[in-house]
Image 1 (cartoon, rainbow, N blue to C red):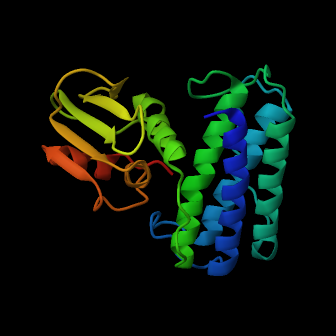
Image 2 (cartoon, rainbow, N blue to C red; image 1 turned 90 degrees about the vertical axis):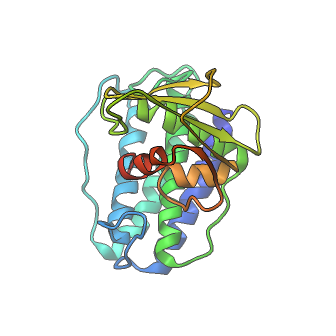
Image 3 (cartoon, helix red, strand yellow; image 1 turned 90 degrees about the horizontal axis):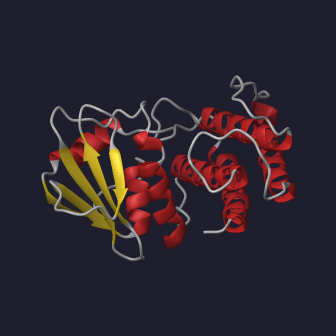
Length: 245
C-alpha cells in the first residue's frame, strides 16, 4: 500500500473512532481491553496521535517521553478529534524524504508513521465500536493483510514480545483471500523470528480471510472463522501472550 492510502485510512478510521466514542459514552467498558473504559481509549489514542505528529512536524530524531495528559471528560472527544486532525494534516504536509525517529523498519519515516498510525487507529476504532455495541465497520483486505505483516514482522520480532516456547516450534499464518499473505513464525525461548513465505511444514497453521486474521491476531476478534491445522496449543499461546494495546 502507498503512503497516501494509509493516510486516507487514518483519516477515515479516526472519524469512526470519535463517532463510536460519542455514541457509547466515556464510562462504557471496552471489551477487548478489560482494564479500559472508553475515556481511557480516547486518551490513549489521542496522546499517541499527538506523540506521532510531533516526530514528523518537529523532525525529532530521538525518542521522547510519553505525554499522557488530556482534558477532562467534557472536552475529551473534541480534543481527540483535534489530535487526529493535526496528525493527518502533519502527515499530508510532510515531504517524502523527511528524516525523523521511528521504531520499526520501513521504506521511509513518513511511510512508517502513516502505516503505524493507520493501524493504531483502526485497531482502536474496533475497540470503540465494540464498546458502543455498534456494527463493526469492515477492514479492507489489503490493509488487513498489511496489518498482519506489521504485527508479525514488526512488533513480535522485538525483544519485548512474550510469544515464546520452551523448545523450537513453528506457526504458519496464511491469508486465504489475497496475495502475499504467508508468514512462518519460528518460536523459541528467544523473540520470534518471522519469514515471509518461509519454506517447510509448520507445527501449526492458522489461516483465513485477511480481515478475520487481522482482528484475531491483534486480539480484537474471534477465531471462529479461521482454520487451524496441527498443534492448536500454539494458537492458545498466541492468544495468551501476544496482546499489544
